[in-house]
Image (spheres, rainbow, N blue to C red):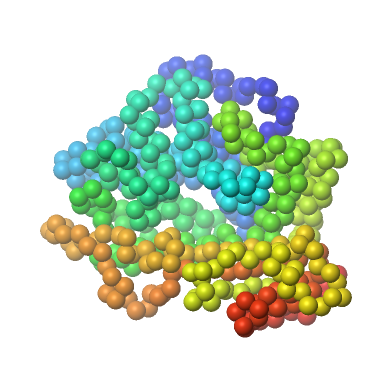
Length: 453
């Protein structure tokens, strides 16, 4: 986060951009994207567990820009005459890919999913909606000459995955909205890029090959469809994404650090007014991962608690992971988020009286992108290139080795003080017995962890 001293000073780079009337639309947007996203790590604090995960959202956005161009060019090469794809369409899709994340906040999704709900009750803010506002800001700030219809479609493509509805009144080329952020079935170049990029950065293998899908996809009617023989490749994409969530994005230590970051930001919010930045694009672009350094180096007494939390992270004195359990399959549909209050109220041993501020709970949902539903059910396939029929593949026609359940809900509990691990672990077990009649966790919290001081 740029310090308050920089808020009144225009960036020299931004001034040079505005003074260059010959620069193309794509160059304008690429440079603005660079300014906005270079200081936002794609995976937030994950690099503190996977040291290689230091790539930025700018790198990801360039990747999506490139893949969006490759995807639409392949459709043009194979079906260009039939679909009427022109230069306008190609440029629109590529710009949407480049700008789709310009509204992202610090620390990956932590900012909108964990921090803002705690300081803005009932907030429905999303980085996709903010991206739309930032696109308008970029165009106005730098006086970019862009076709109004192209600008409208770029913004529609950015939010296509969140609205789950295609633009009203548009009757042709709806398939273009499947490329960058696909709200119909979740197959898009955004996932193609981050799945492969994140696997490589974290040193994980990736057996999903998106190139195969891009080579064989076909537009039928108003949507992009895939060959039936590629359904296992598509399933690998969703399964690899779910595996990244389980082993990387929601790794227990990653979540511990995130919980501490959230607490630090919440404690600093009254003084720094962090949440106020989301209301004004002219201020929002200044908000990035460097906000931690701002808090860490500020001398103000108001930030002392936040500074202490960041110092604990630096020293690896993290919130202690006590235990976790997977919510039983028959209970997921009616699952209610577990809170610190639930754990404290489950304490039976009166030796140490727990307070809610001693406990941190993380409710982790992992799915294949369609909640409890099989993602293949929302995808249309075709048999071969001679066929004009598109169809979905029902559950009973696919490999029986694939899962029959498509969603996990994992509840994790942490102790903010190492000496309370044993007490909190016991209260957590009591909560499980009270809620399900069994201990749903796989094993007890290790005794050596309980005794750690």
